[in-house]
Length: 239
Image (cartoon, rainbow, N blue to C red; front, side, top):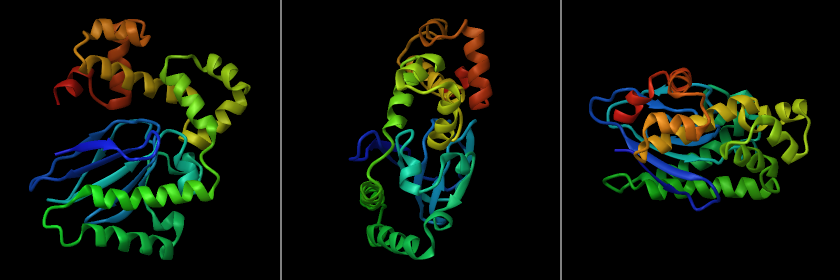
């Protein structure tokens, strides 16, 4: 069963899942975020920002705990531009080195050990503490990350967003690739899809969702979701 909740740091989400005895691929939708992952089998990993849905596969009964960082925050925590991690899952040691990663892995293993059933909160607390420590050591995340993603999530156009944050289009593109892994147009498409799906899950009809989320019509909504998620909206909503 998948669970998620506040992580105790602004805008971040702590999530966990345990794979069944006969696991199937899980469709992870793009969101403009980077995740710090702990796996009972694979150890510590980083999930980069995806441009399209990622099909995650697990071993039987594998436990996962993840810290999903807000859009634009991951590069400060991990120390690399988001574009270098785009559409990738990489060992944390590739970014932080073996020594630092081993120390964090030992803390996570201690938190998970001897509990009978996994307590994701204890493992998650280890991940959150390290992320907070690194953010503080770096002077905090780039404030542009929150400003740009908030504007686009609210439905502002790329041109409107550039004006609000005081950047020309080329500078916004360069900074967005660093912060989110892709340009503002791609981020806007992803955030609009997520806004549309949230509306649909609240009971709004797809025709009305298309209008309220800024699509030309329901067919446009379906094409965009199909392109980004790999399946039609109704498939996602009934999964």
